[in-house]
Length: 371
Image 1 (cartoon, one colour):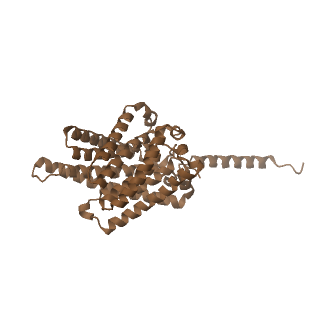
Image 2 (cartoon, one colour):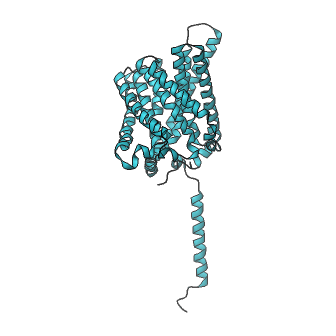
Image 3 (cartoon, rainbow, N blue to C red):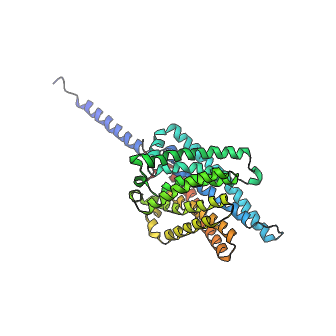
């Protein structure tokens, strides 16, 4: 018949369709760009770097004494040099991550929006601002001093934390799909860190009222979050196995609270000690249950950095405790926790360097956000 399609034409069309399907499949297999994979959870690295910088600065000041001893001179040179190297590394890492995430906001805003709507991803929006506050606070005050520049930078970093507080805490109160009992998981404690770090930095400037305000906001919500998570409601059961390292955030919150209150009150008094002992108890509880993290340790991913930041702040709290108590047991505990913190940090740094290409090029199975 005249209307029949030639067999050769059918073969050509079929071939074109097969080539199109092959090209589509290959494009789907094409590795995504850095900007599509980079989420706010990567700021765990800068959090850990900033915490380590403060730890080494604190260790330098803790053992400071005017002496001409050669051993002390070597120790002081080593710790102060390590502190400056860590501070510079923190600054470089934070600038790079902030620049890449700003590009993600410009070119992949739909992914950022999807991340904000995720019950885990939204909590890490606090991480960049906490990192900048830690970097600001770890800067040597003998050089910078409490100047107007320091105060302006504090406002620049603290205001976004308060805005996120209003958004997220407000959702817990008013939005049915965002009730705390529905979305609570260990990463929810990240929303508390911004307030405690802001209070800690404000107290160094002598802004006691601002420090108490942010401390109150953070600790009140920490109490609610801690009780909600302790009751093992629905949110805690939805956490993927690969994200279980974030359980160590239970250790970070009371440790940060003890440091913030110590800075506000002027000494490591009874409330600070109570929060420190709580963090010690939570740390011991997690260490005694290694099987909880067995599945998450099978393959390295960015969630492993959740180990370093809480351990660093636990070590920081132990240095303030040892300075206040001045006993052999307290000093031994400080050295032990500091050593564990440094070892974990160095191991994670090496793992990250060795797996940098895979971390930036492959999808995070738990925090990969689609448009």
